[in-house]
Length: 147
Image (spheres, rainbow, N blue to C red):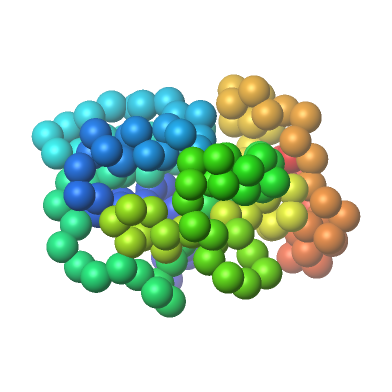
């Protein structure tokens, strides 16, 4: 049987691609990979987020995705500075203006690992894993993974 290897991209439905680029650009440093029709693609090294114009469903509650950042606390401050309401709980979760539920996690604290060449290319080659994340990787036999 085939094995799951990772996620190439996530597509978010938004009301307006232009408004979404402006919203996310107030919070994150964005690099636009490209545009096609009613879509825009935001680069994340070897992955990307697709913004698709035309959200019609209600706001997400339990359904969410985890967005990995290089600095969770800087993200928290950027969200506050942008006037974004943070969701209650122990994590860093927020809803974008179109109801996409986003959970922010710090690269250092999770098993997800970018290859060293990708981190270098993104200017993040000094971004190291926490001891707990390294232990989780060792427990799975993945301790040689980057970062």
